[in-house]
Image (cartoon, rainbow, N blue to C red; front, side):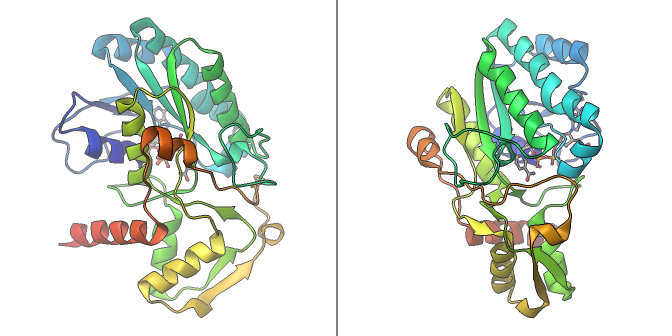
Length: 290
Ligand SMILES: NC(=O)c1ccc[n+]([C@@H]2O[C@H](COP(=O)([O-])OP(=O)(O)OC[C@H]3O[C@@H](n4cnc5c(N)ncnc54)[C@H](OP(=O)(O)O)[C@@H]3O)[C@@H](O)[C@H]2O)c1
């Protein structure tokens, strides 16, 4: 999803090569080149980087299903950790900047919202893998930026994964009952805002770690209730549950959220409010129906 938003933000004014493991998921493939690339293949990463010689690489690939990472830790490490080393090694050869995306799941959720320099303590294998990817960059001599984000939502072409706004919107509009957690707090992030943070990090030639989430912190329950208000749907179909009852495979941090002062001051990052984000997504869905 982030990859598609970056293509939309960058394709008009840049020489852009988009890559992913499968075929290109975008309906309109004009204005950029596309190649298949499995970033867990070290030689393939080296070859494509040396052929294209990018000024900047933005790594949006990851194993993002937190429970799948618990089940297949080897696959998780291959994609979320080792491939970051391959990208960083390739960048150092050419002096390219590497933008990498990390997560609030590197924290244990006891003291959110978090600043960039707070101490990580991941509760899940996914969180640990993303923290390990950060550690690789922190020790690396390449020109790196880590943007940490939270619950990314949005609408894009032929997505391989659902996101909270798309599935809750569908259920609310159909009137299907929803069980929603009331004791996990997050800052939902519009995919376009995260893409904008990547672009700003390139433009400002940023270095180091930046928080790049939405600006509103709320429980997942409040998120879905605010969606029901936004779509004018019946809120009585939303059932409140807590984390203990849900029995998810991977442990989740209870209260995250980010303090955004550094990215606002240094990158001029200006994320939308949650309702502004919902309006943008709604317009995009309407446009595809025209
Ligand atoms: N989504 C969230 O809520 C969230 C929260 C915090 C942080 N993040 C971070 O934000 C970043 C972007 O997430 P996203 O939501 O945009 O994820 P996404 O939609 O799941 O995109 C990940 C992409 O990586 C591709 N991919 C999978 N294996 C690959 C491989 N071996 N080589 C190359 N590409 C491969 C996938 O291709 P297919 O589509 O073909 O499988 C998919 O398009 C990730 O670093 C993630 O950890 C996400």
